[in-house]
Length: 92
Picture 1 (cartoon, rainbow, N blue to C red):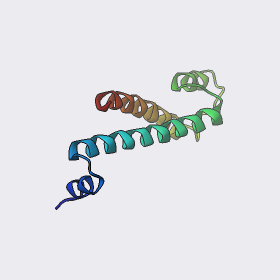
Picture 2: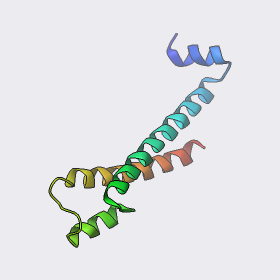
Picture 3: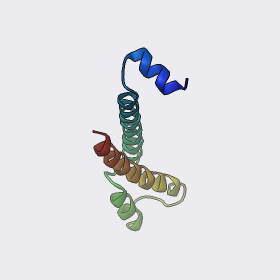
Picture 4: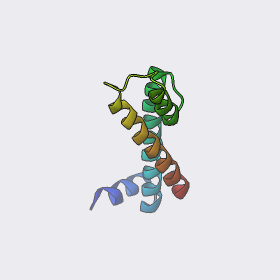
């Protein structure tokens, strides 16, 4: 017997309900992680978005050297956050 049927039986849930709740929980946890990382980067550079980060680069207010990795990380995290929100709409 595989894991999902075993656990769903133990919890007296249907496999479908267990899978759905598991996916929702995973997405919520990942969303919190993304938002936390976004917050930390935004706080570090005193910005509110990737657009502001880019604008401050262009104005020379943020040094490019040593910060590009976090710029791309922020861009990736914001895209992932939006994808997670869309996925949550599907499983609601």
